[in-house]
Length: 158
Image (tube, rainbow, N blue to C red; front, side, top):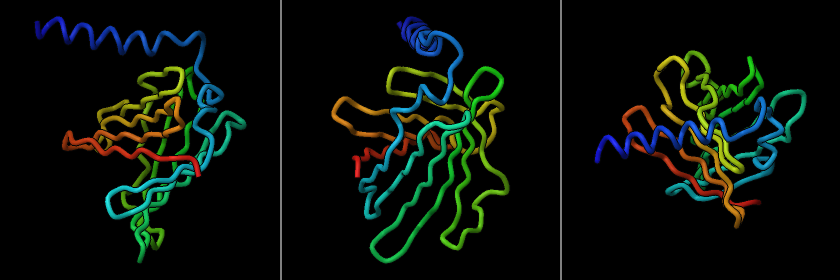
């Protein structure tokens, strides 16, 4: 039975990547566009996604509490070599980078209103990053952290 569940999971992943007709472009991610905001613990997370333009999309992310900003992040999704590549860099509130270089991830799956990225080279950092938007306009960011735990942030239009 365990073999069957792994096979089904693998086929589901393959189907979600290949269900998309043609080469993926950032235009396929236009549903991400907007200003999204929601509580994450005691903090508030904001994601501001720009519309696709010139083969890229970008987002400025801020995590802040009532008294201070905890983290800033820049995310860029670009078209490259027939797929989508995501790069992200987190910063401390004083704009010093949290890591020496941005993390780069490649398209793992693409659905109608969901997209996932995974590190292409097994690099440290996030092991998977998924964005989705439900029919009732909840924009969810889900990140699998290096230790296997999952960070999940449901955000609303603002």
